[in-house]
Image: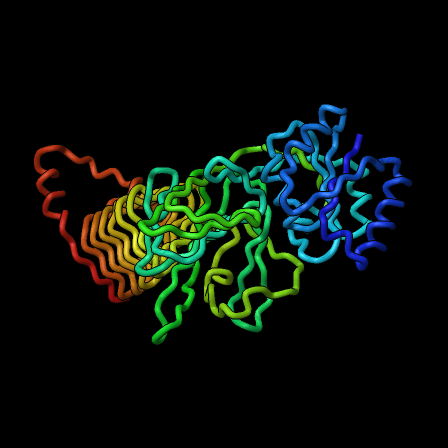
Length: 254
Length: 159
């Protein structure tokens, strides 16, 4: 049995045609199911647990990157198969998973090509897309073996499913996509150096693949993981192998 | 391979120019770890993949694959690698399984052990060089003294 979790933003008028045609296609394939609408402050885990008890086998998330992050960060431990129907803008993870945006995603869903995906674990909760530590005087210890510091402030981005983009200059559109299933998380450290009186300039980033990482600082620093922002002085990030059973497309990038 | 080019054309972070001036272009396909120029690493730095060092590393460095020490990089550590190219400064013993290449800007203060050694003119070496494959028939008595004499060699190769 399929259960569809719709993000709240899909109520907007401009998304109605895409939703209608998606629902028609799902009915054609015979995989239509119960529709539940998520709100901003709803924890998806108890809802999914309830649906699993009622016999749901596949939970399909309908929305964008933030919807996927919001649902999977809470419910990565649920014993079910996850599907994803990307609708609207801000869908970068869909491309990594090989799922086209819009009603064509129903084709991928109906084929049920499954893969186990790794997820990140930060201070007793999961993150699926990206973890971002805003610039601060940080000290990073990798796998309890070596320590990385910068002369001034440093920013840390840990990528799991969501790609990390950068470019060489203003006119360059070259982008690199992070492999979501290589058995490691990728950490991008970007030190900042003072430029002029007030400004800071980003230095060339360092890249470290890792399985366990500890970020500490004397002053509290801001951590953003799957849209949730917290202040921390110590963060432990780990990799949880093959945690999510997900339906992916043939054109996935891993 | 960790990274693969996507077909995206959209460019993000328009207000952060030149974040990676060389990383994306100079990196071979299998590069996994990059130590940036303004980053300091302390401890047992080990990786299963290739390593590019542009900053400073203290402690020990180990990789079973390729280690590249770029110009301006500084390593104060014993180094073990599958193969290596050094253009920066290394203070410590270097043990390379296959080929070691020292470019004209390289400075090595320590013993070198490599199967294949390439030294460009201008590279500075202070230490003992040993290469597996040569049978010197060493005896503990006299040859031991000889090896002690050969322990401190400064080599500046002209061509």
